[in-house]
Length: 467
Image (tube, rainbow, N blue to C red):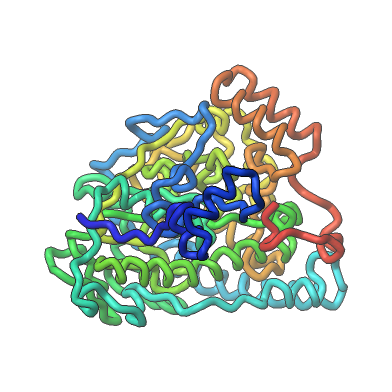
């Protein structure tokens, strides 16, 4: 297909400035001319640069199957309405206990405000409740022109080049990592949820995958065309210094920021795909989900499954949020990776040991046995006791978060521990006999929590708190 570039060579640029051949000749004589660098002018060149390709450590190996065992024959599409953050907690506790937990949340919040407890003071509370996101929608915005509007053909290139292009676009707009997964009817399509969640305790719309040409939605159902076979999975980093202040109100900040940025990035990605002539089917609100993003991230090769049931990536450990969008733009899918996480989690158990409500499974081996409707069948995992987790968060008086497991994980260290992190990650990936020693060393060095939450207000942090 034709490519439309606007690049100028150094000679053409000099000529356009009126310097021309004489200027070039002057440069060869040592006369002063502007120090010009060959410019990069368009998305084709940006996408083809090394910046558009993930540069991962050599110990991160691609594998044919994810390191967490999956039985696709048992798995079915999951009803997202059953998760704790939707209707799952009330279903697990019963309405009476659920109401008591919610009452305790507000009561403890006010008590700690009056006590002026560090990490729960008025300014801390105002900080985490200052969330304001852009509108999010399943169907894309319609504020830009499509190729049909302009009377030109839709964009076409190879799946590999398309993947590089999308990665370049998302990285520019703030995504930390970008991966791609292809939907297969018998396997990965089961990671798309059967139902979204609704407002409050109401059942959300059904997600139907159908042989139709265009997507559509009503209050009862969202239609996803079967031809939309590719999922874009991207991460947004979480602020290290705030996570270390778990389980105070501060930890809600990096979570809310992730959803806030996602609501903007998703709209931009949807418009970009629409401008190329393709659909971008997104999450219907900042907190809604199209599917199991941990599963999608694992299948796309962003990271591995962990004891905490979140994804651990080589770059940021647990310190990211995942988001997804479905498209009909052909994309080269990634492959699962192995850098020793599942082996390490069998030995480490730090997140389970630290977890205040003991919601994280402490068994050495993962299990196929689920604990309730809030767990998805077909995954051999350390299934969390989800009601314990969310009940603790709410009764502690926090707005929404704890993430102690994120903070204490030996693989979730920031830039200040980069040398240490590089060493232990390489050791975990290549020499698992040292896994137990690494856990002990992490405890001895005291990495993870901070006991001084108020120091946040005196810090000169980088933008978004990303070190």
